[in-house]
Image (cartoon, rainbow, N blue to C red; front, side, top):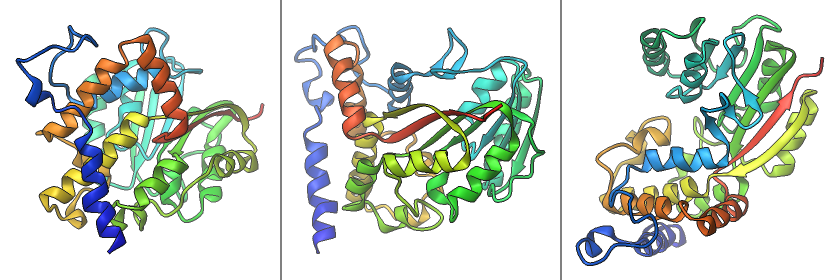
Length: 304
């Protein structure tokens, strides 16, 4: 009963506090981002938010701040999903090897990279990463986003990533933020925290210790993603209100956040985009990214 109360009541209240752009349209225009569209694609706003954190820096060719990509790089993207990181690296001429447990994801990404035509070479592998079917010490850049929370033995999987990197290789690793996961545990469907989804929650200390045990050298630690944390909370509330069957949804929850978007989610995206166009909003974003991050990011290096 308590779980149902949170699920249908508390989250509905969260959604209700988001400005309903449709109800105010035609009456007034916000002074925040007054030149911006009144309706915004939540995914596009997510990219804008991510760039402010240090992701997808096109001007400096950095996938993440401190993680530059060149045509000389051999990039290994483990758990590539829709392939945003792979495409960024392929665009810069790198050789890209990408793995995922979903065969359709690999097939679709192979087609995208082939059509792009800028990668020095590419290889898609259907694999659960334990073990990785790649040579020793080949990659100069290793990317592993939102994978380690899914696996039975994170130490073993990370050891595989370390094996695959050359001495001096850079590593870009992410897992969900602890506080955000624990908040969602109170109302998200139970399948979200069961195999093959999230079967563990990493505290900052857990994540740092995992990387330290692997032998990698820590460069930086960055929490980020309040925008998507709140967006995910809204997603659960919206799906519950629609009576959606969570068991039939795609393996990756993000894959179910697709057009046509619920107006409440679009309102949240528009509100957030307007806010982060201002210095005050950007400062607030930085604070909220620390307090309730969607993800934790570690940049590390394999010793020479």
